[in-house]
Amino acid sequence: MSSSIKVVVTGAAGQIAYSLIPRLINGRTFGDKKVDLALVEIPQVVDKLKGLVMELEDSYFPHMGKVTYTDDFSDAAKDADWFLLVGSIPRGIIYKGKKIEERSDLLSINGGIFVEQGKAIGQYGKDNAKILVVGNPANTNAFIGKNAADKESQLWMAMTMLDSNRAKSIISKKTNVNISEVKNMIIWGNHSPTMYPDSENVLINGELGSSVINDINWVESEFIPTVQQRGKAVIEARGASSATSAAKAAIDTVMACENPTDASDAFSAAIASDGSYGVPEGIICGYPLVTLSDGSIEIKRDLALSDFAKSKFQTSIDELLAEKDAVKHLMK
Ligand code: NAD
Ligand code: LMR
Image 1: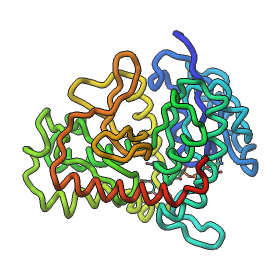
Image 2: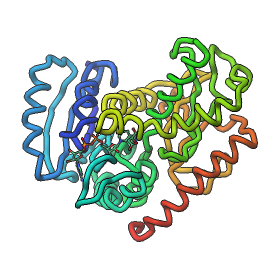
Image 3: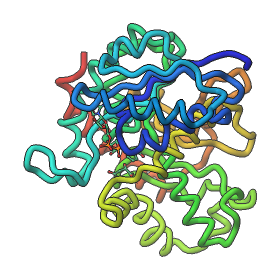
């Protein structure tokens, strides 16, 4: 085995984690590295992780390194390379007598978790740690965590890969191509019902979506709302929020960061804006990203946005700014 890597997973006894954690040690996600896992849960359920560790041991994973579990996030964070922050409350459940319906409901409940976790990541995580926030509202949770960590060399991301994968599936059906031929599928803005899935810059068999999909009606009244509302549709159909697809998307994000991106492609994740595409600096915004051969991750800056795209994107930027305002009491 070439080397080892330490990965922290929060919400480790939850639904997403059950599908996610085995894939982290399958010898594909991190290639030929040995993977040490630090699994984190709240005190009420942390002991259940004993059972998960037993199952991992029973599964024959040659790339599995040391596996620990704890309710002490700071302890887990020590020298970690990757943080997959899944732990938080999903929509669709009853919390303190109220049905949690929208991401905004989650803001006040989940936001606080990310102050303490952010501080610990800044203090104990590796200087070049990568952090993927999955727990909702993912962009603003990442914004809170990044602010608390206060370490520019660490890369904070919020997950929009699931939205991108959903959009690829819809476009592959619409255009009758294999999903592997749908590339550069970018989600701009917030992981929320305001997100803008970009059907113009997507590449379908190497051709721009703007020339392949000549159906603005379909884009506006079917494609965009279906992607925006897919999380809710799954909750309604399944009685629980997406889990296996979310886990797959987290793995896809890790792999996209760990391997150079093909020249014509880009992947979707939200990172802190540096002002690219006119987005106010600092908010965690869904962008087209590329991983370079030296391992650094950058915003792809040369995509053209039509007036239609700009106006959709702006709605999501405005929502992110409103969320930023709503959590200003959690900022340093
Ligand atoms: P779940 O309820 O099955 O599991 C969440 C787990 O997090 C629970 O076991 C809970 O005990 C744990 N947890 C809560 N607070 C914690 C803390 N402070 N530290 C450690 N663990 C903590 O939920 P799930 O289905 O696994 O979903 C998790 C989150 O992911 C939800 O917020 C959901 O909305 C979100 N999600 C995001 C996306 C995305 O695309 N970004 C997709 C699907 C789900
Ligand atoms: C999803 O997109 O499936 C998740 O963010 C869950 C949700 O609340 O929509």
